[in-house]
Amino acid sequence: MTEGMLSGLRVVEFGYAWAGPLVGRTLGDLGADVIKLEQDNARGGHLPNDPALRAALDDWRRGEAVEPTLRASVYPEGEPEPEPWNRSGIFNKHNRNKRGLCADLKTDSGKRIWRRLVEATDVIVDNFSPRGSRSLGIDYETVSQWNPQIISVSCTGYGHTGPFRQRVSYGPVLEAHAGTASATGYAGDGPMKMGHAFPDPIGGLHGSFAVLTALWEREETGRGCFVDLSQLQTNAAIAGDLILETSVQGQAPRRGNRSRGSAPQGVYRCRDESPDARDSMDMWIAITIEDDAAWSRFRQVAKDDRLNDQRFQTLEGRVESHNEIDDLISEWTRNQDRFALAARLQAAEIAALPVMTNGDLVESEHLRERGFIVEWDQPGVGVYEYGGFPIHFSDWGPAEMRPAPLLGGDNREICEELSFSASEIDEFIADGTLVDTPPVGASR
Image (cartoon, rainbow, N blue to C red):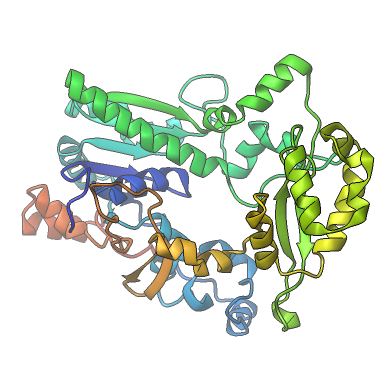
């Protein structure tokens, strides 16, 4: 294992979905020893015995959407079996650079393991509810009695205080509750949520720098601390301009792709690049004209006399005539290649970029040259490409990419590090405290 910036730091992560695992993954990428502690049913089990589901999987072709009930897991080549709990692409992406411990902390044996692990740990991360963390005995009040230097970061939906502290939350509903969806969408239409659970990575990134800040504070004081992180608040915090605008002027109108200070601004349809109708999809380019000088340069590239209309030569006029201008730009872009057009506009110092698909990102020459597209050999899956660590440091090479842990894959190794004997570990396995497969009957 390559030495990293956080080598020597031990983190125990109780994470599910995205926010908690992202904290652990970031710290693992930076070199920390991250132990993902899971329950036996955390990843689900075998697929239900459903002939229709099996038929849908057998008919799947690479590049197509997978059967809806399995889509969120992203199984390699669309095939979940033989061990779906170890083959989820999403799970394996979120949990690289970690080790796996699968233990029942509510048994007497589990409580012994947990206490010894706490005494040898620097940081605990969870994104359970306050009630959930207390019921497992992983709350700060409990663990700080065993290790006063421990740092506990709890990334809950609403925080550990306030009237909503016990509410159930997931990224899509938090997005709405934080006000993001009400500000997103087109004028005259209703709220529009984003295509993924955006509050989760926001909370996870806040959690990551909260850990680093708490570690710095511990260096100064010698004491651990509790970090109470509300994902509602981390999402609302990045919408500061919307909150400010509303406090001064009242509820801001929805603008779709448009801006108060730039016009025209939008995404415009380009030529479809696929000759196969089955693979066909809309292609687009995003364009922002930030000032009158950029508008002048844009007109020179577009070479459409209709854009020389005097009504369009000021920001105020372009905002007022935005619909008309959008129609003219769409007519111009409709039969052009998005990449070639973006290059022409960029050459004229106009902010224009192709709207990228996920496939475009994987194949991106720029991302590959910067080392962002990485691969690792995931046990039971094989070698696949993933998005890597996004930050470059001058005195530290690229982050090492180690595969995500199999369920309970490091049970024995971790317990040995905690000074349990081979016979004790065998007892933990025999009494069901340590497992490496889901319980019988568990399903996706």
